[in-house]
Length: 298
Image (cartoon, rainbow, N blue to C red; front, side):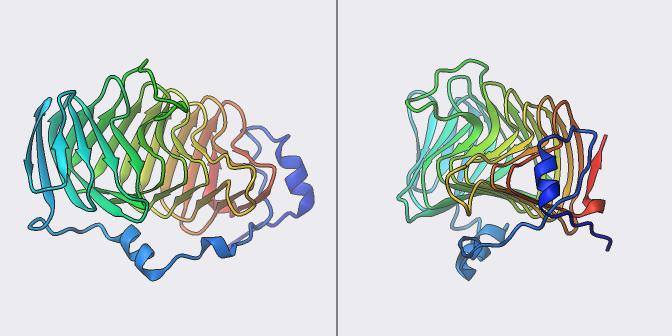
């Protein structure tokens, strides 16, 4: 595999390159903070579930039939999830899903052919948890959309159609369509990881945003319209503010930058990333490592 490494000089030149300049750069380092326990990795990668023990929620307009405990529908068409476990969402819902767990608790949310249209907040809003896995059930198409002008809560949150204040993972073999009409498409205050799945994202601002990091292991991802396509913006912690793409097929069309991060960007392995950007394909003042054959500019 042919690789091109350019040291400090390339980093200095990167900020000056345009979307038509595919300069290839320096290798980013792996920190101790990137090391995960086996149980966490297994939870992130698992895209299976037990239907007998899961809570099944079938939507119909602004109503929901709930089979199991841990979820309840409020009078304002909000589905509240407040217990650790697995939740299967299906049907069409004119409302929003909100998840509030303890900081030590995890949940798996299976999208099993669901359409959620929320006008006044995020379609799925994860207020607190250790981490949440969104699993796309095989052979299903799922759609999340929010309104174009809803009033966000204190702290300008939620600010994405699919929004989490904690770690968010997406896996599975299904399809997810995101329409972030108000602000971002998919966003989290911590780490965003995409393990697999087919995603199409249309956003008013950023398509995929993880404040601490964005990691893409595999999947087919198409960004049709946005400002920045993939963005991480933690500037203060040296082991955060990074974008790592090691697999998957990505087609990024954006009105600003294709990939933006303050600390590091890595595109390698089996990744195939095509970027059509009005500004920079890659915008990073820190360490950047891109394997030449993984990035295509159009």
